[in-house]
Length: 497
Ligand code: NAD
Image (cartoon, rainbow, N blue to C red; front, side):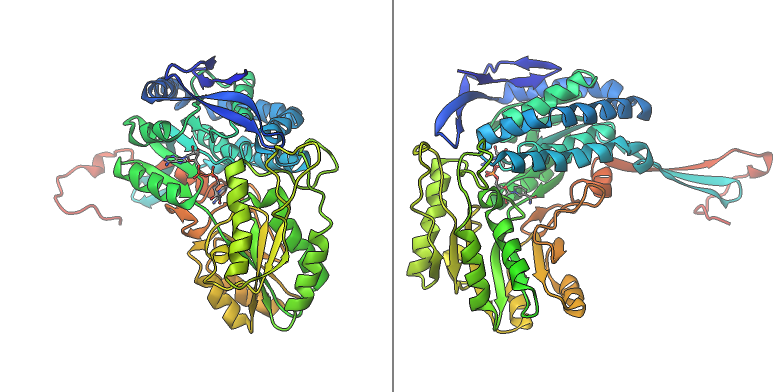
């Protein structure tokens, strides 16, 4: 049995806690490895290594850091296939989708390669008589990252390249469900020349997270996961004096106005709802169809949904793989009969689905629910699976009121040919990321990613310029080179003249 170790101070390290968890291949249901689950001692060792490494990394030159980051970019690029295979083996998503995740992660490494430009401070000359002012940003120290199962490569890459580029050292606690891709990314950073201790990884679950949240030497925590845990991490981390950004769950709505191309809207809805088996925080899980196009749009979505090829992620003909665990698959499937009982129309029922030769895999088919209302469980909960709800609305106003009453505000999209309607939507909708005829509006690396309401606790989005602000603290230096004429005691408040 393969064990998945911690990575502390530049070395793979077996756990001492005695706790392990099986890591399963979701396409076969077979145990693929065992991840070590860290206890407080192992977390302390990782934070200790990071604190020691910070003594030199925190003052290392920008040239030193970018040299490593450029080498790292090349290594991750070269190993993209291998990382994608690790993702597929433990997460289940199809290989092309896993490669897409690596590509989006690479965008952030590329952003980090440009850190000298991003970290340039500001200066003002002669703000007063021979006084100059300079604003600089300095690293925080040891930063921790806690990441979810659904993007085991991309989400860690949202965090640590920018954190270490800013001069911090890092402890990553990836999801215990599929940690191997995250571990490989950390190993590659060592191969790229990152000094030991700058980037560490601990396998683990709640005890490891709790220790990171209370550890006095951890300055900041970046978290991505479900809303209840995001809120817990934010409250606990900030109560221990840390800077925290905690990205939570989502229920993303796609609004389709009557003037939209229904074929393009149906393509987009199917791609965004069922890609990665719906296990994306930016998945579209609700389509809001404005009268009178509902019947036609639902027909087009159903037609496309029925043709999707579902199978193991390492089969190039598969478009959608299994769900992460058997329990999650069963929970996802339970929403379909519940919705029927609560009055929805089940247009496509994918719950009774097996893949030949993979009977023990955690597969489900795709489901489409129509005439869903805001009281139904399928509407209220983040299902995080391939179940798409269609809600009918009489007007744009009714649709936007529904969307803005959602407790979440991660991503959203509008499909229309009307520029005025799109502009109104982008200003009125209560969400952090908006797509106009773009169903999954994940921003590029040099813009920031983050939601509103229960999709983000804390004020900083991830990556882009927000990450420079999150991973550094500001300092302002006011300088005057003294001249004899500056003499004299003056108890008044300093004024700029
Ligand atoms: P999760 O909240 O269960 O786990 C996330 C991390 O928190 C993991 O590392 C896990 O070990 C840890 N954790 C879990 N329970 C904990 C507890 N009780 N105490 C302390 N730590 C705990 O999330 P998940 O199931 O791995 O991921 C799916 C969720 O993540 C979905 O809700 C999805 O929307 C969300 N997500 C959000 C974004 C975003 O950008 N907003 C991106 C990806 C995923």
